[in-house]
Every structure is written in C-alpha cells, then in structure tokens.
Amino acid sequence: MPAKKKYRLLEDDTIVREGRKLYRIEALRDFFNQNGYVRKGAVGGYVESEANLSQEGDCWLFDEACAYEEARVEGEAMMTGHATLRGKAKLHHRARMKSRSIVQGNAIIGGESYLDEDAFVEGNASLTGNIILSQKAYVGGNAILQGSNRFYMEIQGNTIIQGSAMVLGSGMIEDEDAFFDEGIITLDVDASR
Image (cartoon, rainbow, N blue to C red; front, side, top):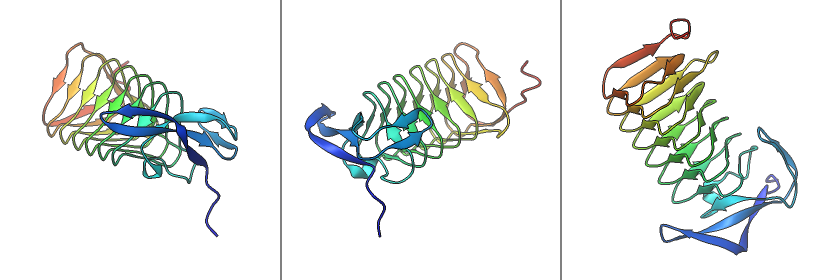
C-alpha cells in the first residue's frame, strides 16, 4: 500500500515565477523536519507540481521558498525564506537553503550543505559533506565541493568557484573576491584556525 501523502497543492494560493504557476503546499499529516515539527494543516512554500517535492521523507519548503521546473527536493532537505531551486537542480539528504539563496541548472546539493545569504550555485556544480556557502558566494561550472564529515567547509564573501575547480576538506575561504577556476584546493581545518 502506498504511503500516505505528506502534502497537497493549494489551488487557490498561487504565485507566478518566470511565467510558471506555483502552488503553495499544505501539510496533510504531522512530521518532524530538521527545522522542527510540521503540523497537519501548516502551509509551506511553493512548488510547480508534486514532482518538485517528494511525498516521502521529511523534506519541506517553508515560508516563500520555491521549487519549480524540473527541480527536486527530497530526503530531509529543507528550504526557507525566499530560497529558489529551479532548472534540473536537486536538493537532497539533509541539505538546507535559506534566505535568498538560489540553486539552478543541473547542480546537486547534498550532505549537510547549508546555503544562506544570497549564495548562488548553478551549472553542473556538486556540493556534498559539511559545507556552508554564504554572503554572495558563487559556485558554478563543473566545480565540486566535498566537505569532510567531521568539520565544516565554509565559503563566504564574494568568493567564486567555477570551471573544473575542486575544493576538498574543512576550513574557511573568506577572502573578499577570491576566485578559483581550476585545480584542486585542499582545506585543512587545523591550518585555517
């Protein structure tokens, strides 16, 4: 027997983004999300269709967060504020998007990744592990960020990571206007403190 649906689309509560009609979601049952309890009847963010937000797991869109086009939220992932997931982007595992962060293209955000404060990810970029991306940081192209499972990798400021750049490990990149387009950057949490 299929699992009971977690949410429904509210036909009378819609917005339009980039010419696409998005529907506010409403919880059909209680469940626990990493942001706290979602109670039956609580309204969430907006999706274009049920294909954008899994009916399984504890994933959820809060506030005015939007997922549309072929974007997909699943697992225990969550979005809050005015976060936007579009294109064929995927947010999964325990990843979180907040504020005005945007993920688009074919980007995949997973692990314990945390995007906040105008963070922008696009292209074929991939983020896994413990990563914090904030303060207008940009990741694009085929860039790969692999954080450690023990410590966080934190990227902030106007940092740009794109092309074929790969960032590994734990630590912080906080230089204003730092730019990485290729090669492997290894961070060490001990060296960054």
